Image (cartoon, rainbow, N blue to C red; front, top):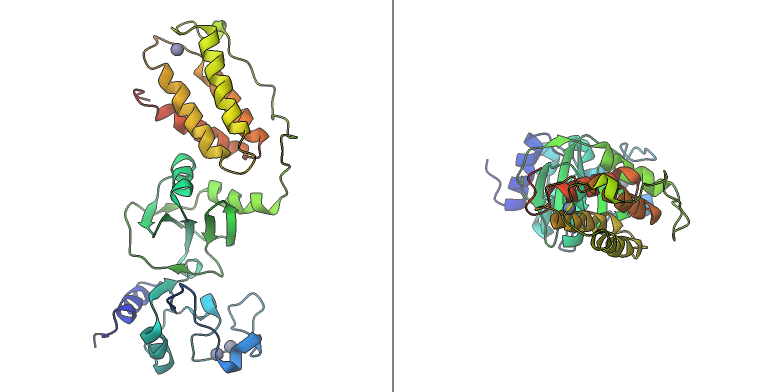
Amino acid sequence: MMARNPLLRTALGLAAAGVPVLPLSRGKRPFGNCPACTGNACGGRPNMKTAGACDCPHVCHAWAAATTNPDVIASRPWLAAWQRAAYVAYHPGGAGLTVVDLDNEHAVTWARATLPPTRTVATGRGEHWIYRGTMRSANSVRPGVDIKSRMSYARWLGTGTGTLTDLPSAVRRLVEAEETTRPRGGVVSSPTTVATWNREVATGCRHTDAYVRTGLERGLVKIRACTEQGAGSQAFGVAQFLAARHTTCPGPCGLDVLGEQIVAAAVSVGVPEPYARRAVANGMTTAPGRTA
Ligand SMILES: [Zn+2]
Ligand SMILES: [Zn+2]
Ligand SMILES: [Zn+2]
């Protein structure tokens, strides 16, 4: 029988594909617990961090209620919830997935510069980037970036576009980085002594030394001004801008040396080195007029 409620219909389709689902309220949140489950008085569901024996038929315990069982999803208590619901949510970890939830355009720009492409789904102001594989969930691993996988839920907004790829270490490291306290405020020295740009490495550059050094220094100032996160995307932008200045030079222009300095500046304000390298490499290769 075809479910009449469109959210329930979507939910049953997802469940049949092995994706655990739950209803979300208009406020994009799970419905609250029933009286018996209030304050976790029931002990919680078996799949929760502190496992309990709750088998409440209502949609209690947020993500932990998510299920692929069509009898539960279409049960009377759940039907009541679907009728009040505004969205379908899913439990990414339960489907073997991780969602990188990018809240705004700035976060999306950062992801494009630093993460490998995968399936993406447009959200209100941002995007979900979905990878194959699970990990611990964490909120605000960067400004506007949440990781939703185990013990979490994400809004279902359609299948999106692009090919699902494996969860990269760059995403795993976001949560590890969040767990370690990173020194801030320029007290970090660069990991290695960074070579400075000079004419010897740029024998085929058309520009004057002053032009190249001034351009680089302006870029580094911009990156170092990002005491908050955002330095990664700034590094991407600076690398892209500087590389674009040299598209008509016969080369070599010593761009790798400039790149090292950009990486060091980003690292000095707290960007993990692998991200900084990736951002700079991507900036250099996507500079307008460059082919590789
Ligand atoms: Zn309950
Ligand atoms: Zn309960
Ligand atoms: Zn040049």
